[in-house]
Image 1: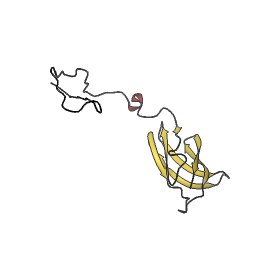
Image 2: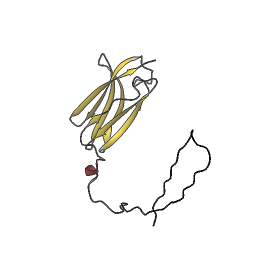
Image 3: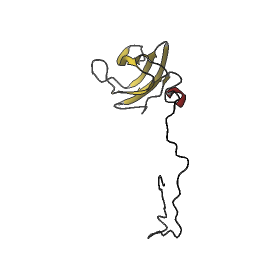
Image 4: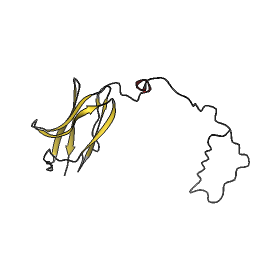
Length: 140
């Protein structure tokens, strides 16, 4: 039985017209594996091995940015935005999360819904006994 067929030919801009194959054979794919794997999800690399806070993107940003983070175990998670004076501007997340990789969006507003000024901001992940922080730049 043939599982899949893939043919790809590109000759543009050197050739226009039809392509003919004199010899064409379909062969079964022998390395297809179907079954149930009893390894835990963490062994497959789906659950992160450590707490991670990734660099936001885009950076610099206007008007919004994405912040990704990873949790190796279930825990209460807080993600907060601070200005350079150390004042908390916005709490993006404050809830319990299962292990895995997540993303959250920030639209450049404070907790009152007002747009914040251009400048450098610190975003901080607090999960379990772990605290990780990174800088980001809002340009208007």
